[in-house]
Image (cartoon, rainbow, N blue to C red; front, side, top):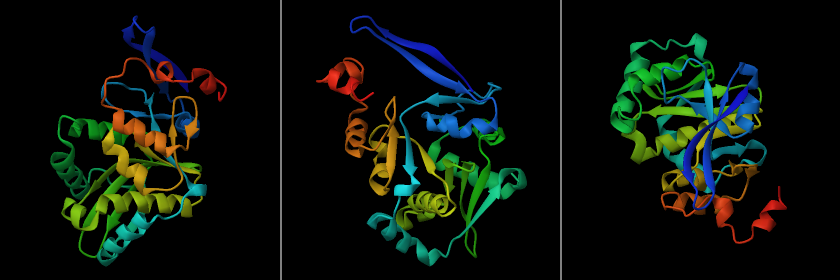
Length: 258
């Protein structure tokens, strides 16, 4: 992979010079290294031909330390009456152009995500990326209840994009159950980590509260301090005077941990 930096905001008052950090994937064999360094797939510009990743406060589960929480068990009890079957299908063997799949995803995008955040053109672009390797399909005897696009290799799973029948969102917490079920599948199938996207703002707190074995990329390492992560999520929308390092009360103590 190739890493490059793109200059962003400048604040001479605090000597803070921001750079966005990107990685360009050169082969599929690099996926474990890319995710392990805190990168996640970037698909915000559909004209970019290379597969890019951005460095962020990524969230993952160390599956060696994962076990079901009381919340996981509660949600599973809610969903049990639906008798859901889970299939894991290689993307190259899945019909991405089937009307059933396209209409299901388009309906979810229209209802839950919005065209401004996820155009159908962008979704087609994402599906063409080689990073996404598998489709989880959730069905029962009556209909399809959801899909998840995932990246899977011998080490990891990235729970990338999820689409589900919103009829069951409040009554059965179907979205939460699907995430838990893919985490459980990842552990059962010998993976080391499952990546759950970014962890920013209060909206991400449900991922942090619900699962054991969590770690987040703090800029230099995978950090298991979920209390700090929750505090950061709660204050992400506040304007900060400088970067987190400059705001530390004891910077020397921090530097000794590096």
